[in-house]
Length: 103
Image 1 (cartoon, rainbow, N blue to C red):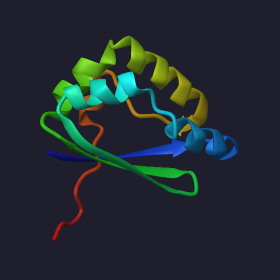
Image 2 (image 1 turned 45 degrees about the vertical axis):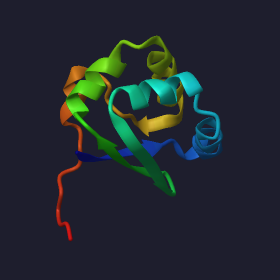
Image 3 (image 1 turned 90 degrees about the vertical axis):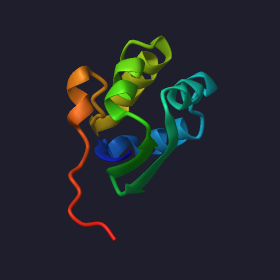
């Protein structure tokens, strides 16, 4: 399934956000892949962040990552940098942007 998300980086933390994503922990990327994610791309337009994921089962991915220590640490780091965060609670399983049009 393809999932699109929107988050927003704090205006004064853009450089830190970009730097953090140049050094995503290998343990985290391995865990994300292990949950069935084959692709995750983030585009940034100013402070707006647009994520597109290819994942087998998004709610299952959220559930698997929610309590994982490496993800908890990463999400705490992102919470310092983001104005709008990605919700890794079970409520976040419905956070995907609705499709407006597709070709």
